[in-house]
Image (cartoon, rainbow, N blue to C red):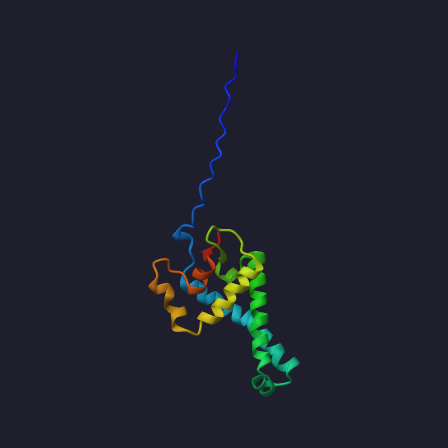
Length: 153
């Protein structure tokens, strides 16, 4: 008896589907997570920078380097949390996570660029109202970085 040979096709696998809209985090959950992160991460950084390194409020406010270094340290810690666990403490409290559009973890530098774009777009009204203007309901920094904030099961 002759065996039939199976033809092996060299077709590429179909592209992964994007995460369904039902899993996206609500905007108010994201704002609440940001407020929690500000109190849990950024406030201690500001306190330490002001009273331990700068010896007072006036010295901190007169310095150009101290506020920038504080924001940079906050960004590094935030990016580290997102790259390792997909969540910052505020995101964990709200039950949300930051992932790529395909649902995978993002790397440290990707998360750091996302934070930098957040800092650049947050003071602008455009950065605040973008989720209400776009059909995707995503923020400007998430859209530019190809990330999405989802509800974590």
